[in-house]
Image (cartoon, rainbow, N blue to C red):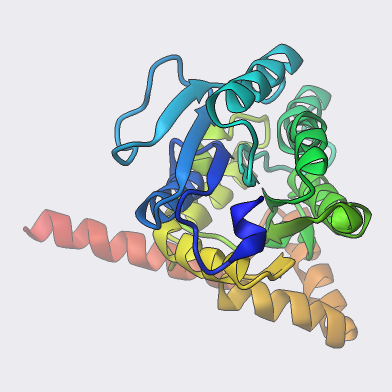
Length: 295
């Protein structure tokens, strides 16, 4: 019996695989699962076991672009546990840039990792969960999958695809006893910016600032998301900005459209796409730099 469907409030003994679980949001979710007594296998691209994993958490290498490595991960789970209760598909990268600047190579890379990496996870483990008659799948999407600001076309598109995949499979897999949730956070402090290496340097610098100086930590986002996942939420909005953006677009569409057109105009003129947040970020950066010099 799938432990999560028996008692969603208790994670003790649950068999969990977390991709991209060696850092950022994935690592914080791993820590929460391990603290609740779950059995956790982390899968990430590092050759060796990364430092910082909780005691008792296992590790294996997995490049989500490689079908053979997914097959190996599935066999590992079957051999190790005989089944899987929770699959967290968290691995991903960031790409920022204007549509005419972002290269097709960058598009192909982010589609292969952020979207097809999730699809491969479904292909690998849905049959196992169907055979068991139960299971839970959690995908890490983004608020960018729900609202779509300019200069983020590649990232917006793949995250919207992940949200659509989660919504589709939620209904499709429900008769088999499998639930699907999508985590959609706004900006938070993580190492995601380290994957930015496209051609639109100006827009990527802005994205880096918004990530590194965001008001929330990965641990805070994970804590909120984890509580909502355990409560059985399908669309997980772990912070106020994500909720505001989602409901603003849904219930105040004319205002949302005007804001997006304003942002697009600034991008076209070479300005910051999000002048208010970026100005606040740079102010905080300046204040911290001044404090370090004075220390």
